[in-house]
Image 1: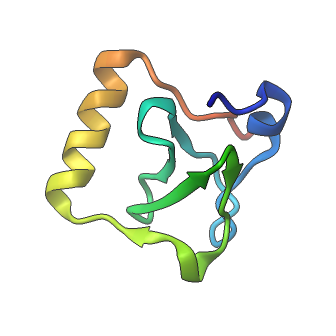
Image 2: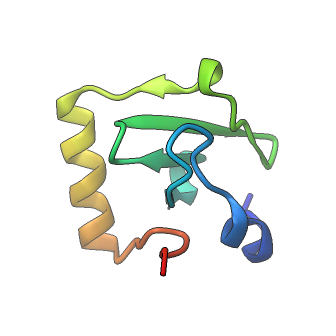
Image 3: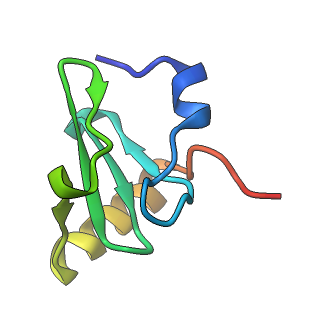
Length: 79
């Protein structure tokens, strides 16, 4: 299930308030700065710090490479 583009534009990491990478095929929003993944369950992003999954170095590298190869950009940019 794809997230609504308007929702995606306003979502931010609840801890550092920064943008996220959206991996639709994995149902996850990823913060590469904190190496933290937020699951999307039944089309609803679970944006709770205590529910987030910490990502190890191997998975971080995989996600960054996947984003670069797939043209996945942060969901918004700060000005």
